[in-house]
Image 1 (cartoon, rainbow, N blue to C red):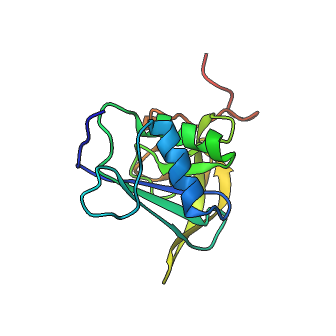
Image 2: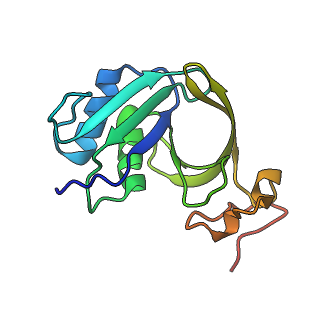
Length: 157
């Protein structure tokens, strides 16, 4: 698997999970060794904790080429049996993709607060297209991860 260095993956995981468990799940999903911040290693990651509903934060540097970030996040969520938040493809600051413990991917919104320890995220809610956060200029309807249907807004046929 080739590596690229054009940007890190920045994920948040529900629950307080030990760094060794997180790196083990990532290594299993990628089928390659994963290292902490060790100079010279080919796949570096940093795991740390903040507050909120997604207190375990994972930053992966020198991400692998040819692998979809959401596919790896989904595999990590299954291995950890814990939800993983990853940025989506809009510029909406409250919108994320949620990789659920069963591997399902769906669009969500969360509240955020900056702290001295890092960004805390809480208040997870589905992206429905009707949420006030969906009305921002970085529209949720332009994402690959479409807003979910609700009784008021059924899915398009």
